[in-house]
Length: 376
Image (cartoon, rainbow, N blue to C red; front, side):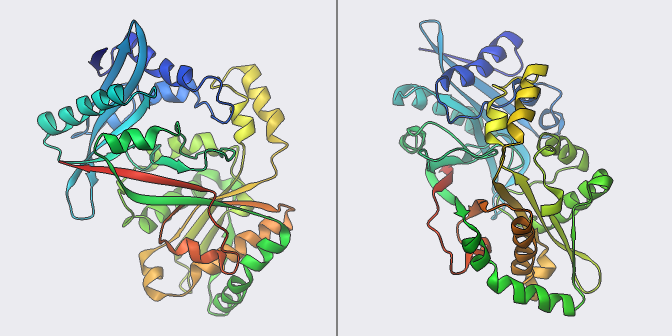
C-alpha cells in the first residue's frame, strides 16, 4: 500500500473525490453529495482555506493502483474545546473494510496534526467545523437516510475505535408518525404558548418574500443561541448564506419560526424542511438539466417534515420562560394544519432540552451518532 499526501493537486484531488462515489456504489440508501459542492469544498477558493491560522493536509491510500482509502487532517484556528484546548479534526474519511489501511490513514493524519501543528486533541469525523458535515452514524443503518444525516459504512465506528478514538459526544434522531402522536406531543407546549402571548411574546413565520432579510435574522439569532454549543466557531453572513443555498428548495417558510420576547427582541428560532432524500438521491450527485428535473419530479411526493434546527438565546434560557416548548407547539401545530403527519426530530444532542419536547411520546430514537475524540 502507498500513502500520498496532498493539498490541492488537481489530478490527485479528482481521485480523492471519486473514491467516495465508487465506495458507496450499489448502496441504495446513500445520498450522493453534489459533485459540484464537494469540488468547491476542496478547492483553494473555499472559505476555510482563506482564513489565517487554518491549515490542512489530505491523504490518499492506494493499493495495486486503486484507491482504497482517504482522510483529511484539518486545523481550524477558531476551533477549541470548552476548556480552551485547540482541536484538530479528521474528516472526509472513507476506507474499505481493512483495519490496517484505516490505521495507516489515521496515523498519517494524526502525525501531521501533532508533529507539524502541535495538536494534542483531535475530533472526528468533522469536515472543517460544525457548519459542515460531521459526526459518525452508530445506529440506524436499517433506516431510510434523511437529507443532512451523517452516514457511513457500519464498520466505521470500529475503525475509529481501533485507531484510538473514543465516542465523546452523542446525538440521536427520532421519527414521529400519526396525527394523534403529534397532537399529544405538543399538549404541554400549547398552554405555555398561550401564557407567553399574554406576556407580550410573539411568533412569526419565515417571510420568504424578504428572504435575505430573514436569512440575516436567522444567522444572527442562530449564532447567538449556539455560541456555547460544542465546537462553535464564528461564521460570517456571507459564508452562512452560501451554506444555506442548497437547502432553499427544502425550506418550508410557513413551518419555520422567529420568536420575540416581551420587549420585541429576537429570542428564538426554528427551521423546518421538507424531507427530500428521494429527490436529492435521484440527482446522482449531478446538477445538469436532467438531474434538476428528476429532483423537481421527486420533490412533489415529499410527505415528511424535518424539524432540523431550533434554539433560544442565552438570555432567554436564563429566564426559564418555556419559550422552547411554546415555539415547538407553534411549529408543530402548523405542521398538522398543513396536512403533514410524519415528523423527524433530528440530530438532538444527548441530554439536550430537545428530548423533553416529546413529553409523553418519548419514542425510542431509531438513529444515533457520535463525535469521536483522541487525546495524545
